[in-house]
Image 1 (tube, rainbow over the protein chains, first blue to last red):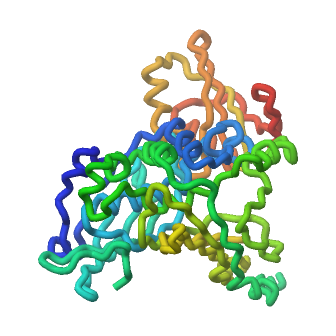
Image 2 (image 1 turned 180 degrees about the vertical axis):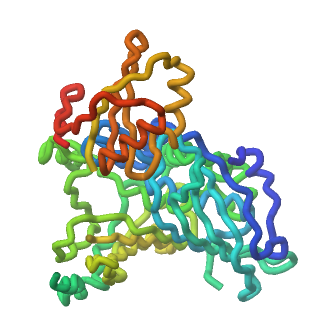
Image 3 (image 1 turned 90 degrees about the vertical axis):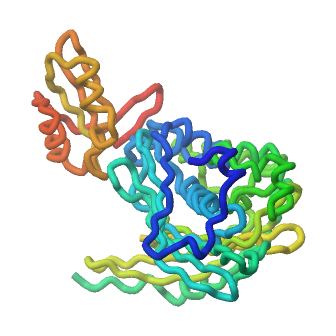
Length: 164
Length: 181
Length: 89
């Protein structure tokens, strides 16, 4: 994952730089520990015991242990795409489904791949396939996204964002 | 085996489009909550904390992570502690309990009790700013039925939530698909 | 899903071989419905107790075989008391 300094200096990726089939640089997160999971629950005040109480998770809910929150995945994915299109691109839409559970010990790879690009109203519309896999290549959150990129020499992506 | 009757009854269909009350989240967006959230997310983006740098970006100010506004609905001071309530009602509570919160939609009139998260969608328009107060409103955007190969009927309930700042600027829209089975 | 306990033997396990057999997620969670929650080992006696959540006893047996750990007995768990919490499975 990028450092603060890298995020300060991110070079803009333009619509022109993107091609269908192109893979985004992946993020590697982990190995996940129970502390990461607990910290997220505390930050968003989610008191569901399956995220911090091992006994409850295994004995009441028959889970493999405390589990990574779906809400965490929902925030990591836009983070990943935001960082890819910084400083002036915009993550417009994301859609994900929750599949395999992620547990402590898992190392997660967040990935994206460009499936389609088109221009609309002077802006670059980039469709992507996205997901998060664990170290055994089991997909946890398959989905899709739409990111708006500026066209080199073109108009800026509006902010607040207005759909093209 | 007799074919199972549809679960997408007229009563259920009537829930489509139902909108909850618009609710203002307690407290404006502030630095400490933002710090805790971004550190838990492990996103060190200086746009979230370095004022000088944030001013130099296109946003012109500190911003907050995508869908941060979806996590601002906290229990206001003075209201009953939801955790105490959950364990009083059920010592083996899951920690969440049967909490009804402002803005919640009425329950779907179905005997399908098991609820699974079928997926999430989001549309982003603006990052909330420090000092913003955020309001939200829930709606049953859609309810559909799916029948599995073994003839089991499920309902797919799409709950949409819109978030605005105090200037009525739309911040984001989230959609949660819940599978009832 | 059910909880099983196996009583079995694995003489000559070291901390290193125990770790290698059990640390990685794929080793204690061989498939989405089988989780080996805990394994206790007595190096003095070469005895193991393993606890597994699985859809079927056979899935647990398959895991034990994959470790090369023959079992003496496998029991289905119905009640757990853990630090004052009682769980009925």
